[in-house]
Amino acid sequence: MNAKCATMTEWLESESMQITNSGYSRRDFIRATSLATLGCGISGLPLSGMAKAQVPATDHWDIKQGRPKPADRRFRSAAVEEFLTDRSARIGDPALAALFINCFPNTLDTTVAPGQFEGKPDTAVLTGDIPAMWLRDSSAQVWPYLQLAVKDRALRQLLEGVIRRQTRCILIDPYANAFMADLDAPPLSWSTKDLTDMKRGVGERKWEVDSLCYPIRLAHGYWKQTGDTGPFDQQWRQAMRLVVDTLRVQQRKQGLGPYHFQRESTVSTEMLPAHGFGNPVRPVGLIASGFRPSDDACIFPFLVPSNLFAVTSLRQLAKMAHAILHDEALANDASSLASEVEQALQQHAIATTPQGTIWAYEVDGFGGQLLMDDANVPSLLGLPYLESSPDKDLYARTRAFCWSDRNPWFFRGTAGEGIGGPHEGRRMIWPMSQMIYAFTSSNPSEIRQSLKMLKNSAEGFGFMHESYDQDNPKKFTREWFAWANTLFGELVGTLAVSHPELLRS
Image (cartoon, rainbow, N blue to C red; front, side, top):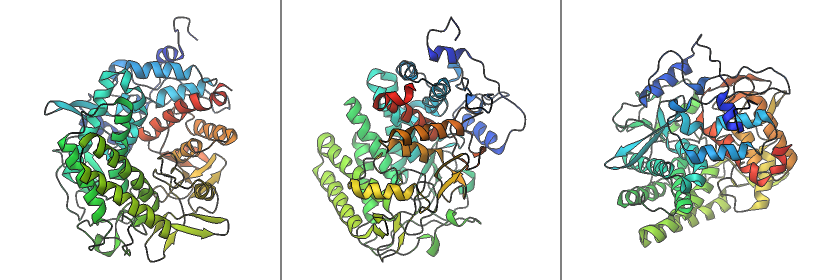
């Protein structure tokens, strides 16, 4: 280590990064577009989200610093830098430490656009290489920073701005999954011809139950960590009322509801059947979702992990409505809906297998059940991560199913093992599933194996990917996927406290 550098962070900051400027891909172009949307000046090379560390393909490889230079970072936080220094000092593997330092701040370094709207904080958070803000992704991307908000007023304001921006987005359209950073901008290019009721500012309009759950999770976490109730004003109350009403409509007790979606595509998961309303369901109390967290169409509209997540989120909302808003009608409505969905899950979402009962992935209320799991969260594997696993034994059997060949979207190869999904197809493992496998494990060997696979998947790059081939980690999708980066940082930062012995070795 350079004698002038007192900490691992400073040493990594001092290391130079080689960036190739030849052969820009379509994703490079998308990234430049998204940075331009945020107002970044692009001159010559992309910023360090695209930087590739030049490392040897051996078991003792290293990762050099891949963050933007301090002046180029979208947001800078002293609390985050202190956290990086503290946690990285507990990691015995320099390569893993470097990967952690690259990934944990990636959302703040490259995707946020803090500002103001009507005199209050307003923060757009892009997903990475796509110039739009997903309600799900943006919530998950900033989630690990909540623990530091009480130490950093500017960071707390940035997080407040995310909550306020999500509130505005929900009020524009509760059925949209993604919004443009500029809410006056036209939609994403692939959404312009969609047959649905597009609103100005919407990037894509795929109805996903979790899109309304994640903002509640973020708001509740923010409140618990900071005690600040500033973002939870009348506009937030209005948005939360709309959330509950939308979820009730999609129980489909009074008919199909207003949402429909069709798209011209040769990919079946990009559209909903039955004139855009999805496959039929029997109204049993569950909430119908058009699409999964992967943005792929549901086969059976009652998506079980999202309904379990909704139970958790609705109860969090009920607590906030009671304690902050003093709106007992909203609190009672959210609570009663949560109980109704929970009861319906027990009656219709549990499948019988030779290994015992497990959660189904999707059901239709008629008896149809789809047994699988997808990498994107909420997933069956990730239920405890979202505090949405009420039955530990049922979850344990479900987890064993998910991480096995009984799950049709589980892959095992020479480069690793994990869960993928239809979004990227066969053989493609999502590192996110390996992170969730570690998050939901108390077994040191499982956690250690997950870390090894995650580190190997980033070899030669220094950041996490969306997915990679089971036999070749150099065949991957998405060079700049901030959710996966930040989730990895959250995992390592958590393990530094919960399993320090694993990181020391």
